[in-house]
Length: 139
Image (cartoon, rainbow, N blue to C red; front, side):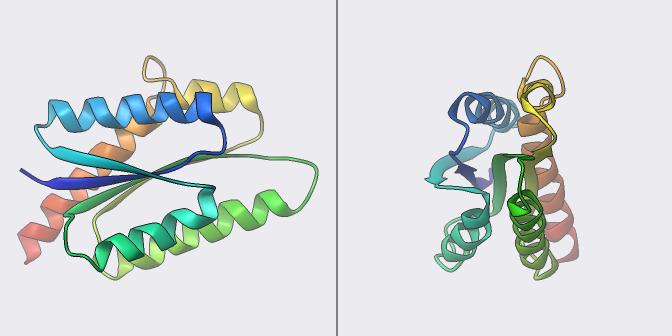
C-alpha cells in the first residue's frame, strides 16, 4: 500500500472539490492511503511537493488545481511555471500525477474537473500510481 500526498491549489474551491473527489475515489479504489494539503495557488504546488518529499513520508504525489485564462499574461506564467516545476520534480525521480487544469474558461474547467465527465483528478491519481509502479520496477 502506497502513501500518497494530494497537494491542491485551492483557488477555485468548487472546481477543486470535484478534482479532489475524483482523486480520492481513485486512490481509495486502488487501496492506497492518502493525505491532502492545501496551498494558495498552482505556483505553490511544486514547492509543497518538494518540501513534503524531503520528509520521506510519501511514495507518490497528486497535484491538483485550476488555472483559467484571464485578460493578462499571468495565465501563461502560472500554467507554464507550475507545469515546469512539477516536471522538474518528476525528472528527479518523483512519482507525480499532474492534475492542474489549464483552461480557457469555467465551462472547460467544469467538464474536466467533474468525476462524472472527464475526471482529471482521478486521472492524475491513477497517473501518480502508474509512475510509482514504474519507479518501483526500476528500483
